Image (cartoon, rainbow, N blue to C red):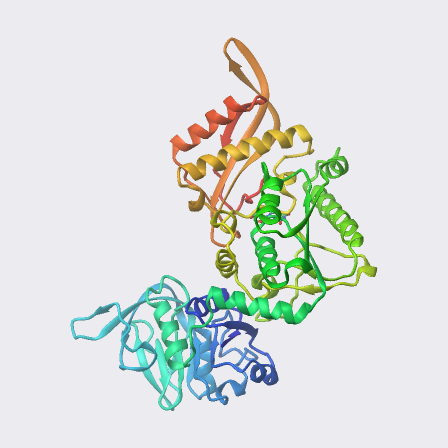
Length: 517
Ligand code: XMP
């Protein structure tokens, strides 16, 4: 396994994902992790991430000395290379111009980390590599024991290697896809130089997780809040395989789910897989509590609290349950702020259990805690879940509650559910569903005039929203074909009485959020 020490780069998680894509387990820790912890992790190699600080600045972070004493290969990326240079007696200085974007590096020494990796040759037969740079400071003097590996026109020391030990520094970012051969560089480091084996495969992850769950819970009973979303579905499938009858799931239908969603969850888990699922139809309760409430944050709170109330009532009814399973995933666990990684333990509040009655005293079991979303999806497929379920768009915990603007009413939810289903069906039909990251319909509680035959109608408005995004922090509205929008609009207006107008949301995030509330 590979240890990644985080100096606060926005790309640190990407490094961990690249290493795992190569088939090797990796974890991220803060740069100031203790020596004990590093030794306990027993890494086969260490990667020092980039970071926003400046090495020459007083008090800027350094790598723990033991990193270079364990006898394992070390790769410093960007800031990570600069600390390595500084710690070995080289010199780093702030450069007057920062370099951001594509660069072409020229390899100056054969072998080592970049052995046999090139994109082009120049006229003199030197190997050239297209890479992605993002830095202000740079190494201006090699440490005495290091030699130059690569240079660019504006950065004379773009990569370096220790003459005897397996320590490498690269100024560019192999973890971003813009560095075309980035994956090969990571692969070369992890498999060849560190000597790791590519064992981190979906089948092994599942097997390992099953063994760990069994060892953790023994013969105890486990409770899981199943939402139908990717994470809790994968936990359900995994726990079912690991402990079968010891698992009980509670699925709360809050009346704010998508069309037929409750039935589909029951069909998939209870009927097909034989998982014990208690379905709680709590639509009336949720809608009663939401009556008269228009403020989005208040709606979120009510939906969250009511969920906990319902879930707790069910949980208390079950006897002898010692464990509560949660679909917490790795990005929930690591908090990469200011270089402090791995210090936060976030319990998802949206759609999982936000609080438990004290007398329940259950321990948490979180089998996906170490996994990135793409890994969760891959093991979902490995566990036999359907592709459509595993690659489904995210759905917010408060569900249609935040897609019906203002007060939530049953009638609105019913219209919205049908409009949303038509939109999603057409996206699938035209092969656009997986080209968008999230797509849905929104109910606008305004009446607009329409004409049907000779009569005027005065009815509701549906807005369609579809976005493309990687991280959901920023998003671009999806440029759906007009023909597709036209068909969706016609179908919604013709098939759903009560809707007279359909609009398409062309706002990007920022400044507009993805959800309308
Ligand atoms: P926004 O609207 O903030 O959405 O751009 C970003 C992502 O978060 C989801 N979202 C939520 N998920 N509970 C959730 O579980 C919420 O209250 C909530 N609000 C937004 C949204 O669907 C999008 O994927």
